[in-house]
Image (cartoon, rainbow, N blue to C red; front, side, top):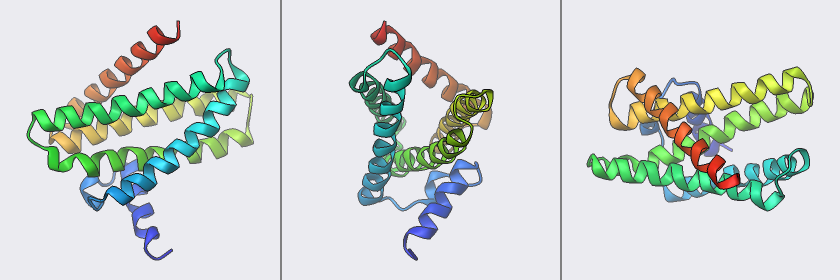
Length: 169
């Protein structure tokens, strides 16, 4: 616990926009842990999504995997183009680790108010928070202004939604 508590604390700081990915160690093992936790959440969410929508479990899971691949490809490509590839591991670790914590918190709150207006509100808050997190990490990874980072975060998420909606329909 003494080894993981500081990492969780740093991920909470990143999720609350109080620290950037540079506060995390550049570790493939830590990235693997964050991706495992994120993917486990996605399996649970895909199962819940399949039970409340027209999509199958596999379709819901494929959508989540597509999001993961796109986020990784986006950061890898852009950081390479701007000669900042050394920030890649920490940035995607920060994204998937902090998003997992956000999703877990919102999910627990959602389960308390499932199928109510409160639950729908939480889903929208979660989406907004994750878009803001992406923008914040773009701001930190590329050393651009917060406004530019958030605009890029919105554009990246819009592109992801466009790809998903064209693939689903």
